[in-house]
Image 1 (cartoon, rainbow, N blue to C red):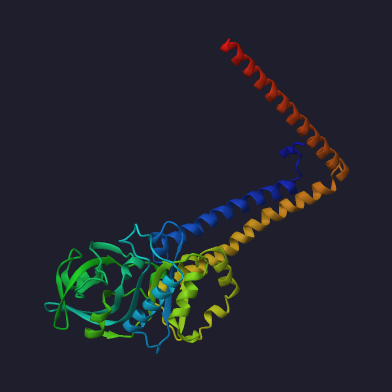
Image 2: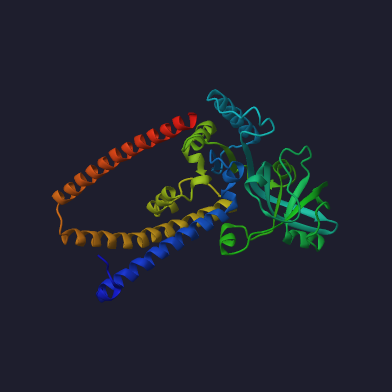
Length: 374
């Protein structure tokens, strides 16, 4: 039975338009949420590390007063390596140059850089390991340094500091003094802009340098962040492993699985904890990148709620329509069963005919082959 638009009542037309618009809005918000999440590069290390979707990115944040040192990280790495070997999680022998995991740790502080008579005191982030693998900041000049570099006298500065010290942002390879020790400017970055960055604490001049240099020549508040990308053969494996091997009390650490935090279930959990989420019992000062991630987490959770509402509207309309059609039906279950019986019978007859046709064709081919032999 065809339903023509001219046969619909005004109410039915309005409902149809509302349902269609709601579904379109659901699709738009779904795309928007995915676009926002994919643009948060700090949260996408697992995707960059492996295309097989068998890894996870985990971030750990430590409360103030928790003693976390480079030795703490080394002990954790040793325990993790041992556990992965015991569970036969290893690299393929063909990939001799590959790594099973990558990690980094960082801590905030303050430091003063000098270039001749010019001096700038700024926020500092001391880093170790593959920090810039997890945080691919936008480079304007030069390159990043690595925690595996033998020399630890490199710095990455933002464009504001570059202009204050050198009057240009094209300064990669130049030297600055930290205390009485020369350091090389490895690269110049563009600091993130916008209300989210400002609110997260990324609104001031900043320098990135090795954590050892920050400890020696500046003021540090201690290591407050550890990040790792590692194998995740089953859901939740990596997060559980990191939590166990860190061996800290619950009030000392917060662990986040970045690679799945913007999927549907975690965002629903954010919605359900909207009151308790702002009640912090742990003395943790999050770095700016985690503040940004948490801000977008709140926004995407609300988008998820809107998506649910917009999807619910057409679903309810379809259910109501189905109920109405069911009540107005002119058939019963006996008709359905009879129709099914006839269909099965016809199908069986068709199979029998197909089998007979195949046999006749086979006989014809064999007969023609015999005539060819004669």
